[in-house]
Amino acid sequence: MEQRHRRWSVIVISLLLLVSSSSIVFAKAIGKNPGKVKGRWLDVEEVAALKDYETVCIGNLGVEIHWKKEGKETPIDEGLLKDKIKQYLLENLRAVTLFDNVEESCSQKSALRLDCDLEVEPGSRAKRYFVGFGAGKSKSVFEIHLRDNESSQDLGLYHGYGTGSGMGFKVAGGGARKMTEDDVQENAKKFVELLQEVW
Image (cartoon, rainbow, N blue to C red; front, side, top):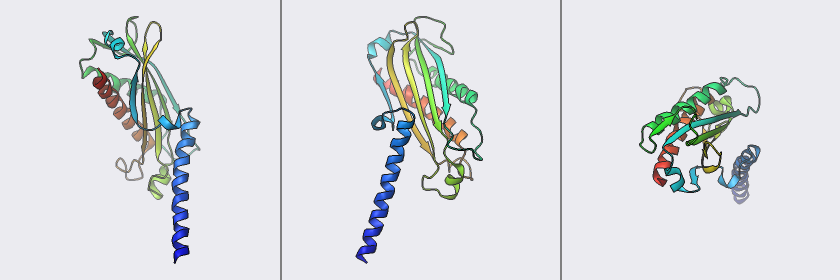
């Protein structure tokens, strides 16, 4: 009986180590510091410098999708994701009074430019449906670089890490496209909330 208990303890510990190491491997694969890859946070160099800007604009939008293998997932359209990033950021920024002008493109030199990078690992819909318990979940890292539009000087960084099994979205385990769009929407909202907090 005691040996069986020890065997189960070893199996559980091994599985926990496997899950933990998978997160670190994902973080390294996309070039992020594993210690800072999870969570949503905003790091601003100098808040006073941000307050000098009357205009904020949406700059470069980068999207990378890391498929492990071909599957039956609905393809994720990079162009659509870029449109969603812009849409959600504009909506949330215009809902607050931090800036006098919120622009879709960066035509003014004296503007705070938001350059965005989104990296997605869609996971496996089949695993989400048949295995469950977090297997096959989608992962994404969304970063917003706050930069001076004229000099491109870095003024801050927002980092958002998200995962999802998608069971709430569709009966068949949830689609990565829908989960990614929802994650972008949540990140845009969280970014503006954190910006308000440091303001």
